[in-house]
Length: 555
Image (cartoon, rainbow, N blue to C red; front, side):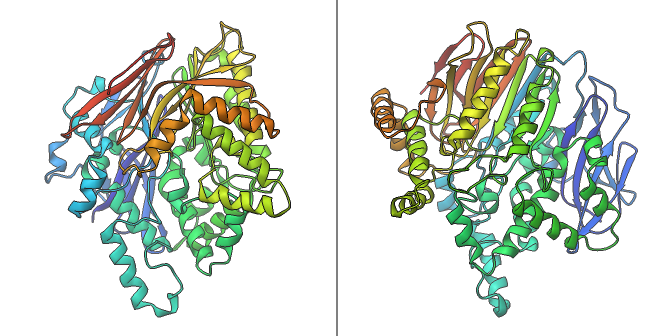
């Protein structure tokens, strides 16, 4: 009897915590006297234990017991080299302080030296190794993973060989791609490969982790355009892929994002727990519903909210819920947008800081953002030029908030309302990833008063991946003032309106594997970026004081 994966510490409140595990067989999982039975998906077994009775502002060491036997912590190296896993709750003493680390795009480690030389050091691995040597008081309060936890379409070499063997043994599935996952079983193997890394496994066992997907968790360019969905629907294996991708995401990532009260009221989760035997039919139906329907009252809402003392995190699903019809494009559906607005604007006087997290950036390098908005305008045409613009949209990865211009403006309007509240937060930060470079951009909204909240776009990407050759010159040029001025003049002449804000890059662009930290102390907040340099140690390469607009950046 053993754990196959986990424990992963997920949502934590003042008095409760969620601990997620994958086990070798069916049974009962126990943490700190609280227990949960496993549920089954295609012969795989999972449990989500709700730990109750914790004290606010406490640090509690925990073990995991499975069918009466202690299965965590593991006692063999390298796991025995890490400190015990703990649950740290928040409360009145820590409400005004927060240390949150964030990033996206983490490719797993491999055994291929040539590939590892290209990928270089994993910034999150390095962070975990350093954290293990520091006092608990210096550990982060939250880990925010902003997408591409998996690369389902760019498999590590050993997983690719495994998939190819499965394809060759099952000729009836010969139409399936030989180098991508398709089934739940293949996703299960990929999650174990990605999250089984000892440093990451320990880190996730002791730091509350919030997650959201991006395109590579399903497939590159997922929901970039309607033509992409039409083309993928023609693939005979695609229904299996989207069911497995969204179903496994719901099990591995989404459930732990919810609070115990939200889980108790979640009909899909309660139905799953009440099912005897394999729950895959329910999970497949859920995935079909999530893929088919965009409005949250009909489908599945993957956006969620965490309250971290006087800092609020609103995670926005900017992939699955998109509206892609020409002329009606939105990053998220109407009902979901209203939910985001309601949760973000609720009791702003109770907040010192607001974090809006979305896997793809809200504010891109200005020249590139304008180009995306222009492309969307062209793609709304019904003639050959519109069809060409749709093809360019996919080929050039025009899939960020500027490519959904109405949504970019609507998010700006929401931020404007919160920033102008007389007792609103000191800072509003939009956390993002995806674009394989990191930066901090100061936004100035047209209608925000000088005494309003300070607004930033904070991007950290990748945590562990290579930077394609074209990325550095393209994004470096996109941030330059001459390129921005020329592009803005050009797109305005073609009828694209100016957005109700401007923004300036104050740190970056930074290229290479990076982990970012947002530190809050009362109404003050800093963000800094760290990268592995020559060794596995981390070096600070950029820092911005969000509340004082002072920044400094190292090479």
